[in-house]
Length: 409
Image (cartoon, rainbow, N blue to C red; front, side):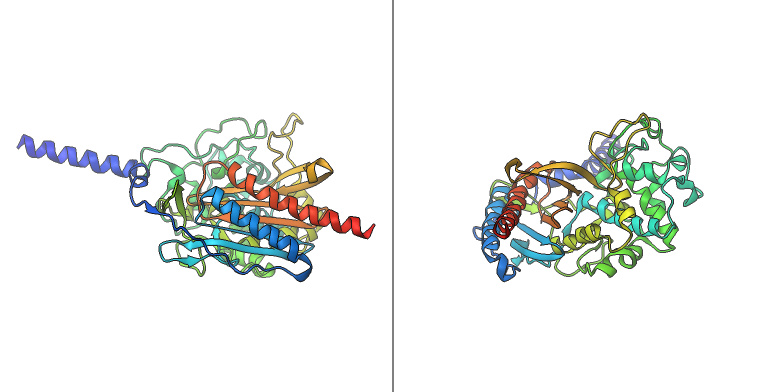
């Protein structure tokens, strides 16, 4: 009898340990050899950008190799025209489905920029007040989160914690949730809304996807629509962003399979459910779609220039000091970005992102009308590797623009 009880307890312990730490165990399984050849799609390049496009094609190919990514896709627009877009590799390695410029990838935290634009449309209509407490839009929200303002959660200055270990969650890492949320975005806040703040509101800066998710509840309340429907009505529909949507579990066309890779091998990334973080990291998009979003910011087509400027204005703390990331309201802003080897200093704003099995780079250079998006179906803890490969593509565009300016003079 004791043996049976012991075996039962041991089995229960093993099952519990596996579920709690499932990503660790799963990571060691299912690795396959990477293909030796990777197809390239047909580049979208107008005739007058053909030479630059050929250089960018080669950069893309080389970058995919260096990054060991199943696929890499990029798009660049200038003054609203896509001057180059291409993809190399596979959106689905096992089935040998080549990636194209229409392939969508998990956007990770680049979703925050999309959510910011959604909020901007409602701000412009007077339906969202940045200085109002969250309780104005979600009356049953618990303290202390209820007292934070929309501005504070959009700028990460409210003091809300970020993801952490949760030993009642399966698995224990909150950012790897496998639970599906079929309810409103307000429902996703219940797990942490009453947790103590890590600093007094407005007195510090701490990047938090959990806190930013509150913007989704505000948008739903202000628009009267569920987040996915609001995304379509406010942003993706008007801009023709056909590959951009929330990752709600429903299949979509031309969607990249998320992967982990290591030297010469690949495996599908741990299967998370992103329905608990649509506003902060639960969207998919294509690079071409994101150039449309960037151009809409430059031209202020969805709201006024004044509203646009409010969204990209870095937020100061209560004592008047700047936050340490140049973070605005869903965007990071740099007024003195050096390009062309330091010969040009320009403004830049954007938002990069990491997700399970995907990484994204998204930058807007408003003074030159340039928007750049690069995405891959490989996850990374750090954005540095993708940024290192994306920036030479940006520089090649500025080199082309500098050459044209010189020819005109």
